[in-house]
View 1 (tube, rainbow, N blue to C red):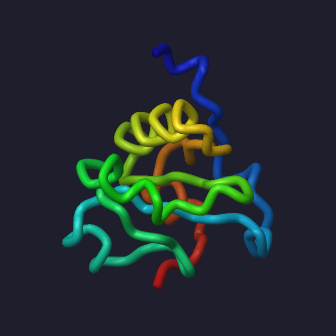
View 2: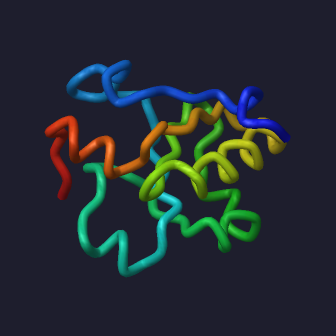
Length: 104
């Protein structure tokens, strides 16, 4: 699957605050999650995603992020194949932080 087929959004395309119905999915590892994440995010590490797919809501769009965008691109492709309306956050949490957006 090529990157062109993966729906992607940049931080500056996202409204502040994020829309109420948007599900945010963090696919980083536990230690990365503990060091800070987007408020309200669901945490499912990439390697656990296939076994925990039922934890990802399917009734709206899902914004997927990792540290720089690589793992979340993989997760987005997987979720898309599973019928989830997923979109990858380009640049990941590093781009989010660079843009001055808050973490918890």
